[in-house]
Image (cartoon, rainbow, N blue to C red; front, side, top):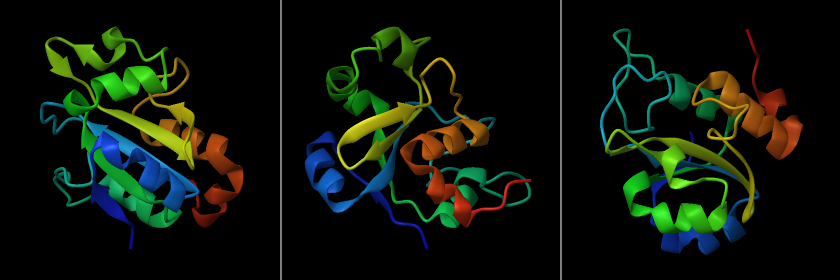
Length: 139
């Protein structure tokens, strides 16, 4: 069972102190059933599969979730390279996943070599601690 909690940016310190490795999913301001990586409370595909939920269950990483629109100032202060153009497109706030080691940002899906996809998340987890990947079998 994965730990999943909806939090606000004011919870960052508490979550960072309580968790060695964790992911923070910043949820888009729109629903997009076409995305492969949905928020943990998002829809499943037509077969009842939820790729992100399955991956997190295998990795046993805690995942926290916040709407992107509620975290803009925090995100910019966290990583000045996360300029507003990367998280705000077509009048909508786009999704973002960030991997942390306690309170240190390790990597995110908006770095140039990452995507909001299973391989992108696996890359982030590997950068956090490659030993975490020993819990899953990759196809």
